[in-house]
Each structure stands twice: as C-alpha cells, then as structure tokens.
Image (cartoon, rainbow, N blue to C red):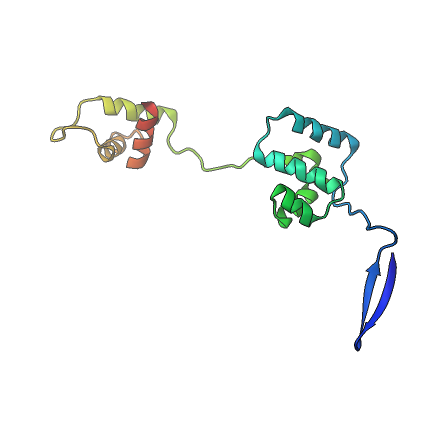
Length: 162
C-alpha cells in the first residue's frame, strides 16, 4: 500500500493507493469446518428465513465482499451485519440462532382454562338467557377460580376449545 500526496488547488490530500489489486477485506474468517457445515445446512433446505439470510451473509463476508454488497445481496442492514460478524467471533455458529426470550408469564393455567369451559357448559344464572364472556369472567372471579381474568381471555379460551 502506498501513500500518495496530491496537491489540488491549495489543499494537499493524502490518498491511499493499493498495490496491484484491491486488498481483500476479512470481516469474518470462517474455519474450513464451519464453512463446510454452513454449506451443508444450505443444502438441506429446511431453514427459517432468518437463519438462511445469516448463513448467506457469513459466507459472503468470508469471501471478502464489503458490507455494501452483502447487505444488498441478503437484505440485511449494515448494523445487523456488523452484529452478526461480532457474534460469530464470540460464539461461532451459535450466531445463526436467536437467544431464547423469557416472554410474559402465564397468568391462567390449564386447570383454570378447564374451569372456564365447565362454567360455560353449566346453566346460566337467573335473568340471563346465555353466558356472555363478561359474565363468565365475573363468575370465575366470584367463585375464586382466579384472581383476575378479562372477558377477552375468556373468549380466547372458549375459541380454542371449539
């Protein structure tokens, strides 16, 4: 690599000129074993879209392609590609998969869902011709089957049972 000084007007600019051909960038350096595993995974054809994109991105980055070319090829942002490269350096092929997320804890368990269904099958209270979801939710709390339940949750439970 050479450093060339050019004087343009009154300013001097330093320009790096590469000798012979452009230098190959190595954003990711895959081991031969990992490269073979990735190519094997592509051949199976039973991958999620995210994993497929990540595999193609890793292979392209290993080939020395710049981020601008890879992001157009696999439709990932430069930030996502940078994170993928860093994650590969830290955890290897574990970077292909998302970490488990905790999610919201279940408020109504299977026993309580069964109670909703049983209650809906019973006779309606006096003054009502049929069970409404709001009425079922209020009755569940009244009978002490759960502390709190919304009419939407009751609707979803009954919808899944049918």
